[in-house]
Image (cartoon, rainbow, N blue to C red; front, side):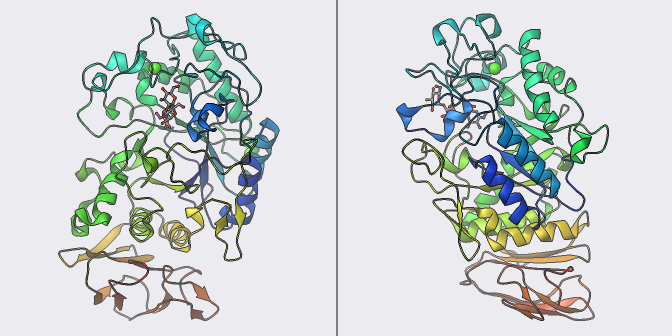
Length: 484
Ligand code: LAG
Ligand code: CA
């Protein structure tokens, strides 16, 4: 369950938060496939409660009312077509599976596909679930439960959401059928929402009943779905993420927190010379790494304090470090712009999501940020694909916030988060020649629109990164996007 089954040479997934299925299919064909992205995490696919009382918040999608594939992102036919079209261009789909709970109790009770619920009876007729399928008697998780009481964290309600009893054979069957249906449609795996709130033993039974990935979508025979479990464990709680790593991969919340702290100026980049398990990170193969996710970029979940698109220079620095560094499997965030932390995606007065538009410079409009279309970000995806499994070597730093390192003899990257310029002759480990920096510009024919770096026969080159430059990163690599 720890292999993402990316197409050959691909390494990186992006969370297209709240995107519609038709738009994702188009994005696979026009951008993500050609640019070498490995996969996409999509927003929850199961029918959810419609919450006009909160002007259709983004979080209504974390309140399933049935397992029918009908949401603001589209219906089952559109979902199936998206998976097919993305797989055809080498881009995998991972589904955010909400299987810990159903809805909370609200004044409204109609779903995005017209299903209804009767909260007083714990009745979700479109599954169907009834009272026996939920943990009972009702209790709600409190803040202190996290530090004392694993059983309450798993058997009580998260935020008052009706808590499913995964110990029940009937409940397991409904969940497994839902997930196997998605596998039959060609998905490559799942994010397990709120995994901390479910018993590892129950999850293991569910995972082991999942089908192999669909060979008709290009997966090798016998391939197991990639599973990354959302467990927020920053230390000190009754439940440890180590209970989940024997099962499948786990979301690495420490990754973005530490890098955000450093790129925000609250720790020195020099200390990252041994970034990895020495810092208490998960083992590389167990880790799904990211700087921000849909929760913590808006102060939900593990909370804020992470870099987001709102601090672009530092954010691009942290993302470039993640993509240049060999540890773990990286995930990028692609957001809609927000000030209200509860607001849903750009929508019309009927609550229909408004598609991103694509500007002439290839950035997005209509309220979509599309971080994945920022050159400094997608160029580093190509960098990571290029350097593959090569080792990190030749770490250099100035005892402060200027660092550089090589990835084998395929790639070189430098950072300057100091208040003074970087101007040094550094070892790049690359074959002698002329390279275009893929951060300040790109290769255009035989010239560079940004910086041009000349690597000598000893592998060394003069590297300049001014403190006041637009970006704090410089990256060059072998391969057509960079080498002249
Ligand atoms: C997750 N991970 O474990 C998701 O990443 C996170 O986005 C989900 O919470 C959470 N688990 C449940 O799936 C989000 C919002 C919550 C929201 C919840 C359900 O962060 O704020 O709760 O989705 O929609 C909302 C209200 C609560 C209310 C609750 C139940 O904010 O005040 O009690 O609904 O009605
Ligand atoms: Ca639970």
